[in-house]
Amino acid sequence: MRVLVAVASKHGATLEIGAAVMNRLRERGLEANLRSPEEVRDLTGYDAVVIGSAVYAGRWLEPARVLVGRHGGALAKRPVWLFSSGPLGDPPLPADAPHDATAMAKVTGAVDHRVFAGRLDRELLGIAERAVVRALRAPEGDFRDFAAISAWSDDIADVLQAQPAVTST
Image 1 (cartoon, rainbow, N blue to C red):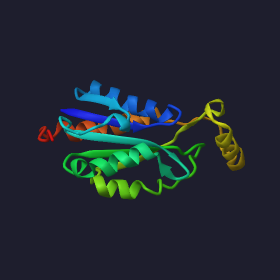
Image 2: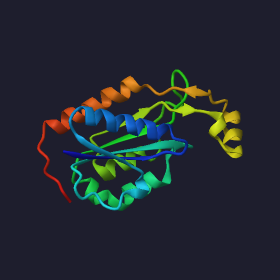
Image 3: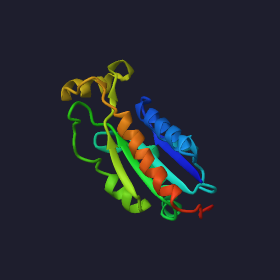
């Protein structure tokens, strides 16, 4: 079974989550490929899709939103999982799901949407981003829980391995 993992990442932390998902799916015997949303021209040959995006100002990054908008019909014909990355701290804040996650889940018919804590490295930020982080007093650090990401990936593998590959368009 072939799985596309498409991830929109601004500074690399969300891409690393996507790579962890892909690697775990491969460890579980699935053929998984990691792509940026901009690289995805069509979904032919993929039986399932995982889409992830970093979240800024409560929204997914535009490339992930465009991917869902462009391929919504094809996504709705196969199992789709969504993840968002962005909350910071312990406990992670903000606690709310991104504003557009509900709409993305509806368009795709997503099996699940998860929010994973993110990473903040001020050295990677531009001047405007640093000002926002300073104003919000966002905590710096890596708050990603790779054990939770692996467990979620196992849940995906369990679902996919329980059903035959049926979609190629």
